[in-house]
Length: 88
Image (cartoon, rainbow, N blue to C red; front, top):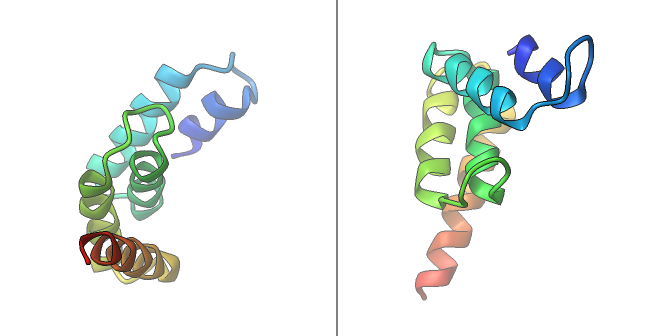
């Protein structure tokens, strides 16, 4: 996940949104809960990717299942609640 942050901030490497997303995705797919939360947030708000709340849910669920990211469960619950409210 560190390389994704460096690409996002330009810390020691040029700022590069494509590389930021690539490193974040690699981190998330590799099981890193920080990467999963970050990728979920990208999908939730449409940062670096097209907004996709269902994909955001998928990544938040994966992160929350690891139980080492307390805020992942909150992000998941908040998004689920917003989506339920939209349906009503």
